[in-house]
Length: 187
Length: 187
Image (tube, rainbow over all chains, first blue to last red; front, side):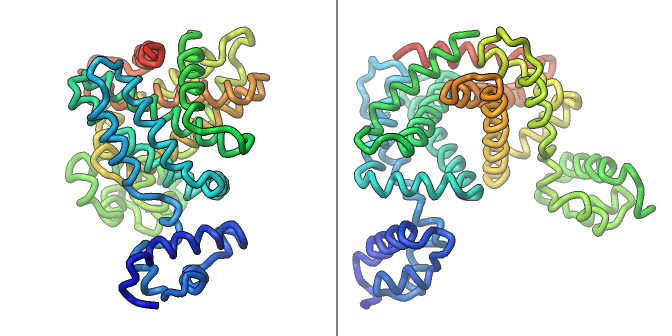
């Protein structure tokens, strides 16, 4: 139980995930998580503000997405650039698909977590729009493409989380984008 | 300063709006608002949880939008139904256009208010999707149309708030929807 355990954060996250699934998010305390990880509550709070934060990977996705936008071929349409970034994010969050599904269910069941998810999506949209503007995309198009991409990301994730386990998340982004284009076109 | 003043809520809201503009949202306290309205802090807290709540009209928009969706002609496409509801909401929030612009600026400047705005938009999208399902629109189309309409609402409002004062908000919804369709179609 070393205070300087280099993998303390990873062990705490793993313990939290296991407990959220085993006994439910609401019934799991920080003390439970620390005990399961063989660490102290004090150590938990050095890595996370609260147990909710374990569900939100932080700004990891925002950085990844910005990198994809910056390095995408220069002749791609804004929505294509955004789609590449969102597909990359999908691969990142589904590297542990079972956990990603359970996480989606926990978020869907709690109003405060749904709000936090929307807030994180707002941060992603702002980062994508900023990245597009840096590629000389006009400001209003950058915002529209970024928001559309993030909406497709959120809807694809919600749909994937309750779909068959054999399905992959990333390809669903283009399916949802096609639906958005189709519905928006029926004016 | 009657405890049962029937218009206490309206006077408190009006006083709050005036002070938010005159001296800034951050520097305005509940005590300031109550004093300006000629009422007590206790009365303020019978009507509002905190000063932030003055900025969010509550569930008024959700109810209006649901009514429009329920009474729209049966042959309209889902996105058309949603657009009617969003245009109606635009008319509602711009009955005091100067305040609506100031409110947008206050929200844009505060991360916590931006999050609350996104949360309220999530509630509106859920209400619209529910209303569409009640019209026998398939569930996934209902969600896509509702989310698209709410996104157009939010983007149009953000754009309108920083545009020329002569511009009306409601017509901008269709402009933004056309841009969303156009950008989404460039895949």
